[in-house]
Image 1 (cartoon, one colour):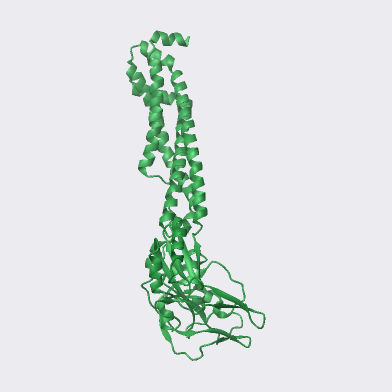
Image 2 (image 1 turned 45 degrees about the horizontal axis):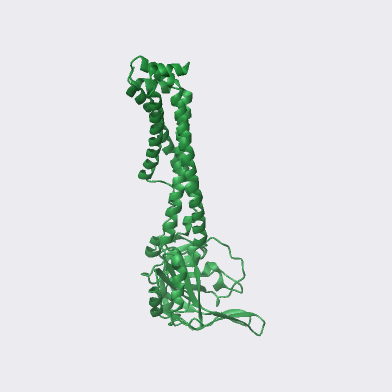
Amino acid sequence: MNFVQRAMFYISRKKGKTVSLFLLVFIVAVFLILCFGVLNASESLGGNIRTSLGAAFYIRAKTEVSMNEKGEAEVKENSVHITGKEIDEIMQTGEIKYYNPVNYGFAKSDGIQFIPGNKHTEESNMGKVTALRFSALAPNFTDETTVLVEGEHITETDSGKILISEQLASANHLSVGDTLTLTHAKLGEADGAYIDEIPVKTAYTQVKVSGIYKLNIEDTSIKPTAGVVDNEIYASLDVLNELQESDTGIYTGEVDFYVTDPDKLENITHNVQLLQSIDWKTHFIRTNDFKYSKIAEKLSSVGDLVKMLFVFVSVVSTAFMTLLLTMRMRSRMQEAGILLSVGVPKGQIMAGFLLEVLSVTLIALILSYIASLCVTDFLGRSLFGELQLNLLNEETITTGMQNSIQIENYMKLNSIETLFIYFCQLVIIAVSTFVSSIMIMRLKPKEILSKMC
């Protein structure tokens, strides 16, 4: 009987020892892959957040709040604006990837009956228009209180495009691709009623419904028709220009700037505030890191914890496997003495021992890989899936095409990393078996048999 046959015979005969070795290697391999996967995921996700649109700052005019004769609060905005020239200066202050200027206005259309609000009349039948460069970067879309369900987002290359709400589209039997004619309007109030302060219409523009969005929140506050959230129209910048409610290159609303690295947000905003072309007495700046600071802290804590766990599992598992294999070899001392006494070469005996252990190890590693795929997929989505929602889909921003966010499994290791973990385990097991075998093989058959008496 050669050493291969002896190895296979021992594996089939000593089922208890075979199963114990199999389970040890299997469990250790899965734990090591999970630890390595979590560590890799925390680093990869942190890097992706830093290189995506990881933070933003917003510049807008300050507002003044005063009380009128009736004791009601009135909000008055300064008649100030930011021009394209000032935006170009701001874009040169740091690693800013996109800017998204916003203008606001109101519009009416014979083809739209807006969702009625407080004190609704035909004269107040109008909607708020938010004209911008990239609709996907509008705060309501980035925080997912508003979601595009049909069509495409508005991009910088679009003109005459609008987005309307699902409820408004349903009420007016509108769909993506339909065209409408809008006219200018201005919400006012007189004698307790909401009015249109532009009674004579002189500006019109034809627009196309580019997309339809739905709201994930319910607004129960009492507002005029123009303030009802379902009546908000997102439009390309040229729409309000055509309606004579804004001028090309001049922005009276907010201007949003998106940076690539949240860690540099403070320095960039500091440089912006040094610009003298912007009157900071009438403007203010606010920042938003999309919760990056909290995410980075969480990822760092997870990474540190997993590093300690990885070292602990590696050391303990190595020590335990070495101990188990040493005891396993020592229990084979009598068998080795008998084989040596009948003339079986030491090399064949050691080869048989190695073959037994490595055969079980290889099977355990293969099955552990299959198990780890299922476990890492589940843990990857549970631990890191929520964090990835903070990553803005750049393809949607630039092309307007709405893509469903595919949650990447950052815990899934590549083939090189997996093979490295398995190779290290194989080396530890092979060395432990080889060293234990040498300790036995150095003895003579008579000495081995005498030790067993």
